[in-house]
Image (cartoon, each protein chain N blue to C red):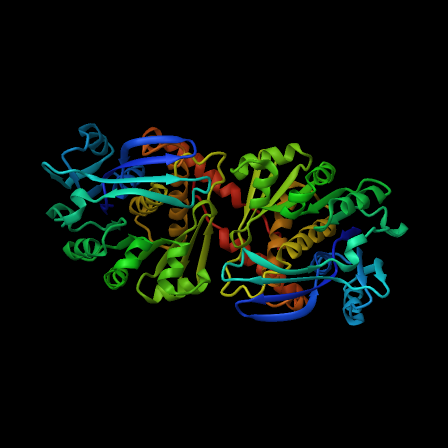
Length: 306
Length: 306
């Protein structure tokens, strides 16, 4: 099924305990779209870049089935840039530099061909931009998934809450769930946040996995313990891309399929962190995904013998 | 099957965001023995207390099937005392007071009737005391499980490593696994630690669950997300007690049964934290345990449809 993905397409400079990568391809929408492209080929990207973005990377996205009609290329301007450093604990990072560039006045215009897509993935961006995309859809998509971060909670909580009200699935991390709800317990936080609008809440816990909440239902997806997390940049976006890509492919938003989608998202994220930037995603094979999903199933499998 | 449990029987003063409990019953061996008593009635406790320990509590232990022949009661002396404070993040705590008292020169003497027990649970204690208990067993038990903590890694690493060499299962938390192995990745840490002796390693991650490693095999047991963690004191010991109690009951140390035992341990721990001290364990019913284990199974259940 058709999927609209919104977010940044950008450059990152990343330092981890294992090395440094200068001005490599990054951006939420890049990771989301590539991850989703392993499941569906009807992906409509909405983003903005400067004229400094390599043609080869745009060609790669097109080759993966990503429609770039909604990609605004600003002549004479620069793409969004982020630089960050990770320490041993990859769940935390320091931002060293942020250059908004083209993102400063990003005002997305959805191509007509995008407007009746059934699935919408709002990557982490200004809440106002996320809202503008929702409003431009001809009819309400079957499923709207939204990612956001503490930064918007700090500086734009009222606008953020307006968008949250309009989405079906919100994906945030545990600290953000606590900040948004004012509750320490994630179970209680999930109840509070579901009352704000989204009937599904995904709480991402990095190396500790992810929780999916829906009404009284709860699902715990582990993270795959890895011998080496090389670069966690984009893991959350890759998770979101795998999640919505799998849902768009199967066109099934039942609880059982949502759980599967969380595992597919987790599997995609577990590949993403194996190399810098989108490098691992570029070489990924469908058979590897299948094998990794099987490994997730084995990881938690036990027979309670009740 | 017969089980020997070693560790402290003590008093705790506990402060959590939900209240304060003064001089309540605590101690690793108390939690371990009570948790195990839900699975097996052949429990042989080894510990030391002063003459200040309430008779009613000893009677309760006996009623649960715990043999107190190995409990050394020192006339005119005081029981071990610990005071601690938890903040919102219950995975961390401040120690406010530690009074060793009778524990200062604890030199356990195993009653003859204990010495051919098939299962041995070494609760967190001085490595030398743990070693002394191993040496007093007439023959090597079928399974030796050992709990320890960073404190012994800081001040007694050589003695600690000697005990670790002799056990089958080591239970420690993630930070301790990193400290003991010198490796940040838990997968790599598990490989290093298994080479030190124990062929099974349990890494406890508090609210993030637990990992079981054995050779190349891995199992991820979630923690049950709870609306309220009232008091985490004793959760790790209760986990260990449920784990070894279930193994002793089933007398089966296969990988599949070990995984089940981890879940039973996690279920017991999830009850322990619902009230102060051993209060929740005291009112627990077998049917509730069964229901909680079922909830754990549901929490991670998904059909990969591969």
